[in-house]
Image: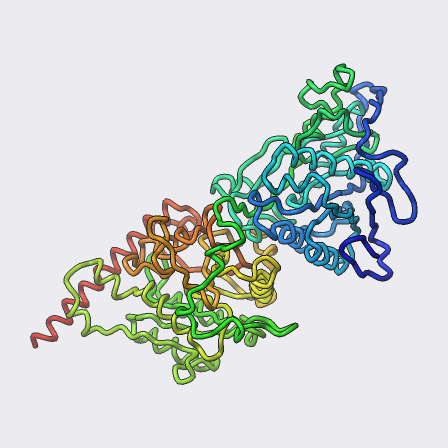
Amino acid sequence: VTVKGPVIECENCEHVTVYEKNGVDDYKHDEVNEYEQPLGEEEEVVKVELEQDVAKHERPEIITIIRLVTNDVIPKFKKGTSFQNLKYLLYHEHQMDSVKRVWVLDRIKDPEYLKLMSDKLTERNEKFVIREYENTNSFEKSEESDLEDLAKYTYRNMKFAQRYAIKKVKNPWFIISDMHHLFTEESIEKLKDDIENTPLSKQGLVMDTYALTAPSQPMVINSYTNNAIIENQLSEGLMYKEPYHAIVALHTSFEGFYGAEIKDNIAMRKALNCEGTSLDKEGSLLPNICQVAKNAYSLRLFTYPNHHLPNEEGDKFESFDSSCSPWQESEMALEDGELPRFLIYRIYGNDMPPLQMKGQLLKNLKYTLENEETNIKGLTKRFVLNRVIDTEIEQEMIKLLASHGYNEAEGTVVRIPFERKGLAQIANDTDALVQYATNLNEVRNELLSTAKNDPAKFHWNLVFDGNQFITREAFAAIVESTMDKGREKEHYFSVPMCRLKYPQNTTWLTKDTKVHELLHSDRCFLQEPQLMFRWNSCQQFDLSNGWNSCQQFDLSNGYGRRSKLQFLSNLGCYRSGGICTEAGYILRLYPFPNDPDHEPLEVIVNHGIRHRVRQQSLARFQDLLHSLRNNALEGEVR
């Protein structure tokens, strides 16, 4: 298939339809002109004979989703967002027998992106349409955030999709959506229920949308998302509700959009006269053929806003301080087909009962070594034993690691000893003692420095907490995220973490487990992410802008003081315009809480209870450290 402009090579692709430009707003097939008049011309209002409201539509067997894939509107979206979300939908919106999908690659400006999108859709055997980009269309102005022109552009997209549906869709109901909306098995069934209860006089249903507030898609949005998960995410602030969004299910008897005065992204609602105020071109009130869906909904993916970042020319976030790495860009360049090299450190410290059972770190380390993929291509594993106080547990960990091929001599185990005598040299200050014993951010910074100077020249360094478990799917998702076009120069990635709610076992958690299986069975939930760093990630920021002077962990933030969350916040992982983006996901094993006053599940999922138990654990840990310090002082006197 050849398109004027970019060239798409696709032999024997019967599922691809290409439309070429034929005038200002008319698209025709390269062999048969399917439209007798330009899309830009006014349409005559179709007078619909309304049936009695007691008559209902039949429940449809199949619903077609027509998705409009458009250019990234910068700065509304970060560059590459459309391609990211297109891929996400292909991977996480399951193919359903009752759903047909058609993708409209609508005037994609970047030929490389168009090629990537069409290749990905062809690879997945998806049916798609290509509409050719022309320099004269109004999208040029929308890139300058001209919202009025952007609305007109959106309106014309909808007209094309609606006309395509009338010509091509064989089943009676279809959805016109953008590439940022996912439909679950539950939402499609609920839509069918709503259609079955819709009077014949109504030709369209508007539905609610639940939109993500942060880039945590693998943990929240997938084909198994249901009302219970949505309610939980709403309460956590990870989603918000958009009542009656621009997503509408239409019957093929719906003839089109009425009048040039409909210029915004709720054009379908206005055409259906959902508000009861839409007029035709003569000024007469249009019939209300709109129905509000009672149960159907869509899920809106995160769209990576880019409002506060500098522009691409001279973007200081894409530069790097050469002093942060001994390697040059040319040394780190990948050959065709070569995967980046990843190094993961997992930091194991001390158990904190009653928040955690004594020995849980040893128990979870054993589970990890026995059930993770032993050799994952492109991933080097290292384990850090960080000032473990209980010498028996530490020795058991060392033996266990050695039995699986990890040891200090080869550098795959890093042991930072807990020096009891050294406590005598520390002031009798609780914070100072906890800082010495936990040592978290000092260790993280030291590990990052070591990783960046490692002769193996790792492209990405993952500094994770202990108890993290990596499946094949999880690592593949991380790798793919770092290699996507538009993200090659990202320096920092947050990795969403799904914390297990129940003790893991091999019947449902192995190296081959898929995250949607855990979410669907309600076995894990989203919590604070882990962090990974590009090989040259040490950019300088002005303190007046709220950034750390050199992007390292703050040594003043110890255990219990949100040491990692502060760093995530500094990078902008929780707001638009930051320099942190998202990659893949990770699983956190069960901590085996043993608080006598609360059930284990309460300690894990209830934030208030968890905080109180955490404080109790910290108080007990502080008492232990003061006792050990006193013993060290007495030893010096003797």
